[in-house]
Amino acid sequence: MASPIKQKVNAYTWGCSLFAAVGSLLYGIDSGIVSTTIAQPEFVKYFAPFTPPLKGALVSTFGAGAVFGVFFAGWSADYLGRKKTIMIAAVIALIAGIIQAAAVHIGMLIAGRIVGGFAVGIMNMTIPIYNSEIAPPHKRGMIAGLHAQFVGIGFACANWVGFGCSYSSGAFQWRFPLAFQCAPAIIVLAGIFWLPYSPRWLLEQERDEEALKVIKRLHGDIGADESFFLAEYQQMREQLRFEKAQQKAGWVDCFNTPSNRKRIMLAVLVQAFTQLSGINVINYFQTDLYKGLGMQGHMVTLLAGYGLVGPLANAVCLYYVDTWGRKKTLWITGLAMTCDMAIVMGLSGSYGSSDNSTAKGVTIAFIFCFSIIYSLGYNSIHYIYVPEIMTMSIRAKGSSISVVSNVLINILFNQVSPIAFADVGYKYYSLFICTNLVGAITVFFIFPETKGKTLEEIALIFGEEVIVADLDTMREKIDVDEETGEGETKAEITKVEAK
Image (cartoon, helix red, strand yellow):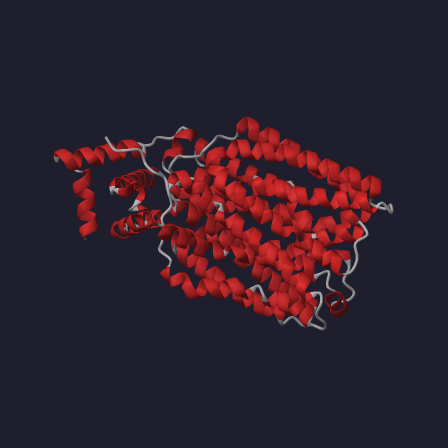
């Protein structure tokens, strides 16, 4: 009998997943850089009059570009592959950064934001899929969650770049932060050719020999024998062939069976609850929140540097997510965010216009806490959960549908929030108290747990037929075939590898 699988991640898998996640920095930097840039005095002066509706438009058009990027990725990730799709996004992101940094009027800047959003939409959909497909099953949460980790790091870096540039003068104060968006795109383009294709995509294209080589390099030393990667290869290949024979991979196929409809519903819900938490309202308009609490000058951009607490909390989530599980982490996080937002609303209403500096400091502390709580749960898990509940045939397109729901809600909040804060102030927080509570209840009652299962085995949760055994059984069969000479499993794989 095969010994229990020792789930670990080898250096090559870490290198591939970390490099792919460099593209995730684009989302964090492109999203975060606008938060401090729109607060820079030289920026406001250059683009005056910079009204609240114009501020909302500058932020929300980024999301509009992302919608088209996500749909493009839904096609490209299947047709061209995950690797080439990431490369295309990096090229577009580089162009977008140049346009924004060189902007001479608000229209040009908004156009650059739309192009940048297109690139980020592609990255935001493709990278979690790629990393989930190269990860060993019991560490998939950690590997797929690197996307959120790097998004958070990018956001924090953007905030600190904005703070540093607040001490400069002239156009550099806002042009350099916008140009900083080009950095991760250049890094991705410099190294993308060394990144392997997703093994599941290669199998989907019937490039079995290449897929086996990639799987062996990714997982060949797990358990100190060959049985793990051989079993994983066999499981992937047989299940993908079965799924390919059963259904096509068009957009309509995302809704043609009860199991697929349930997948889409859960994916849309987890993405929607992520935005309905209110996290991006706080992230994008945090400088306005701090000004409303009496902060002035460099202190506003300094406080924006609190974004560092997010990646630190997210690192804790990544370490434990494959132990905690997805479902429990989500609903507990939802309840905690409900309580935190209620406290922020109460303190803002009671002390926002007062001279009580201590109370205002406590309010800011709870805003920080909200980011910590969010990063302990939703921040990583919505990127992990969506691709892993999808079958290979609808993974790219189903993920794109769910991500679009995220982006559309984000666009709505980005456009409405500046006006809402101006008109109703702290009472706006009551919306997010309700949405976080509803999210927690919904996750508790209808979301299934997926931790520890291979992407192929998760189909069982949705009542679908799975024609391959679990990995432990597959390993036992391979070991028996190798020892007795019975069966064809080992021989077939050896034949493919030798080609």
